[in-house]
Image 1 (tube, rainbow, N blue to C red):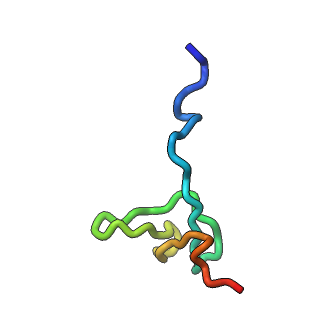
Image 2: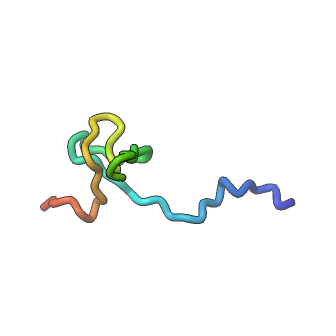
Image 3: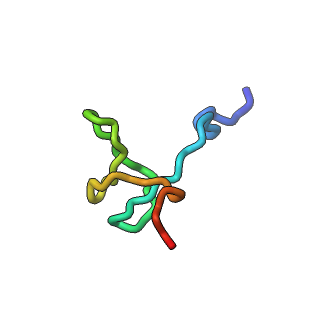
Length: 56
């Protein structure tokens, strides 16, 4: 046994998501069961990747 559980080593890289309404990074988004949209748990706004934001 190596002693390190597999849960500590995720195989997939987590995407950074941002809520433009709450102005925060979201680490625990919800996924709509009907349309598979990724939305904010606080306000329900569709989340965006930081590189998609129209800042500047």
